[in-house]
Image 1 (tube, rainbow, N blue to C red):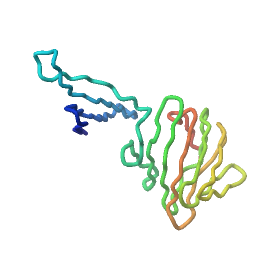
Image 2 (image 1 turned 45 degrees about the horizontal axis):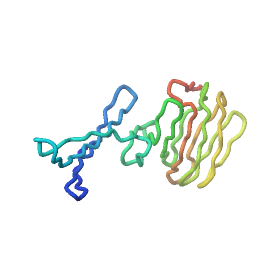
Image 3 (image 1 turned 135 degrees about the horizontal axis):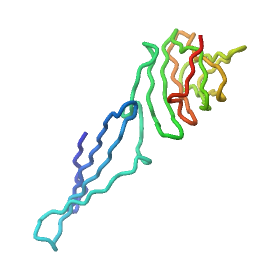
Image 4 (image 1 turned 90 degrees about the vertical axis):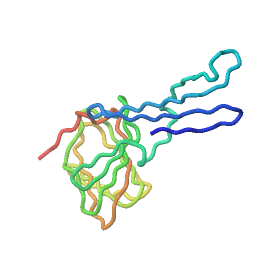
Length: 169
């Protein structure tokens, strides 16, 4: 993506957002190139390049990595770091994941819209809009949507779950 924006007073800048895929990682490159007028140079324009920190980037499901799971479910990596992840997920009516646990990751599920059920070894918990639950490492769990509508929720994992999931029969 490439954007041109004029700031007035003869200064313009070009914003560049580059996305590249490296295995299961998405690399974001943000550059802002400023075009400044200079009276001290025989060149009419100078380019000043600044790298923009990702920390201040506004994210949404429109501009982050998307993936499909379970054939019908969606996930969006809102934050994908080495020390934590935040994923927004959508599970349609009747959708579910398999029973599993994470060896090291602690997770927090928070319902944004709809209703979901989190099944554990000996009980289940119904989660409605505005409700959440923590799942400790090595605790077997399974998320299901047994309602008639989509459920949208956040899953916050510390550390991330990459390579940490053990599916159960």
